[in-house]
Length: 82
Picture 1 (cartoon, one colour):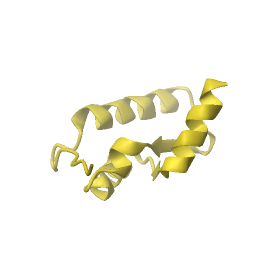
Picture 2 (cartoon, one colour):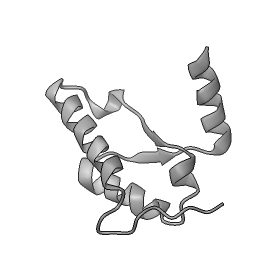
Picture 3 (cartoon, helix red, strand yellow):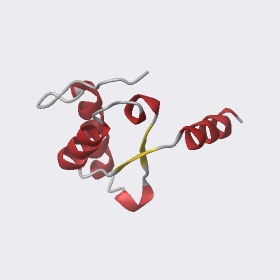
Picture 4 (cartoon, helix red, strand yellow):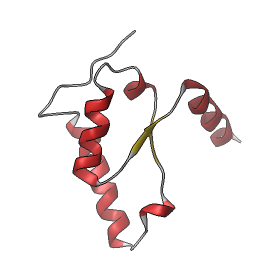
């Protein structure tokens, strides 16, 4: 099933607002972006406008969001359950 994330200029506001909040939190604690890794999972991977979302995230928060492959997502889910 191909999903479509809400189109611009209102790309998933809740997601972007969460990323903005996370960005501010990191900055307030002087955490370097070198110490964080931002990823997106199936919702973004399967969206027809995933590039639009990841570009908006980069523009809004200076975060480069890596869209995980399904196998990577499964591996991280498994590791997180240990």
